[in-house]
Length: 331
Image 1: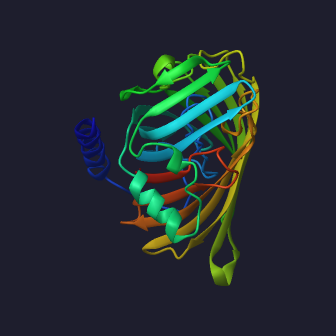
Image 2: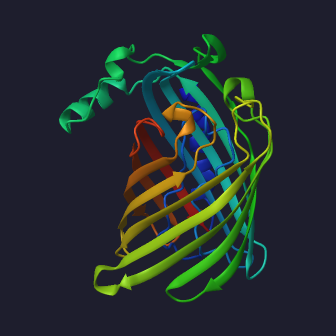
């Protein structure tokens, strides 16, 4: 599996670097969302940039998300185990259709595996005084994604899987754009191309609509940029815990960027959404808040690498540990 991911990454990166570049490379939010394996199958969009591609300009990106979980919880008649690692490799492409309209698509590849980071994360938690009580109840580097109701397993994944996820189509309209701010409207359609039995997709079509705003240099001496997203997601009737699934979910994000317009920028971002399932378990039935910190390395005016580390702020609602790596190119 890792050899295939590496080959695909090298191929797409080569395509990105081989493209002539002419557009500016403004700092943008982290392209991230909740990757809880029981939630990533639904159509929560990535945090969107408020400034769209102008007419005939393009942008492409390859992202790799690695999430690690180690938890087993029971409440009333429900039991869930999320013990393992999930990898999400995705290619996205955007095109400026005209002066105010952008279209694009995203194709993800999903893999669930035993992983390799458990020992590292336990050491991380020990260093910063964080609890390992849940991790001590599981076997390191094992895979067990399972949901049971009344001791009846509904979903069980305990051997490695990989495959195409749910493809997403999207469009956006620039509502306002000034030298220091922008506002845009985004619509996203997620198609049921992934295997729901393997938690690669939901088995349904989802539709989202959202607004994205950015304000640059509102504290000019500090060179700070603020951004925010907010929207609604309508879930089609899927095949993953369909009797518990909600149909309407609210989502959003907000954050700050310190942008020195040179080699690096630093970012902090909060992503949140309302619960997707009717469940007494925090992992399924609670609202979520996820913190991501990191930044971007600007290779030139058009190409940059985003690096982020995510931690969950409401216990067990989002992955315990997330690594977000995105190579972006504008041309």
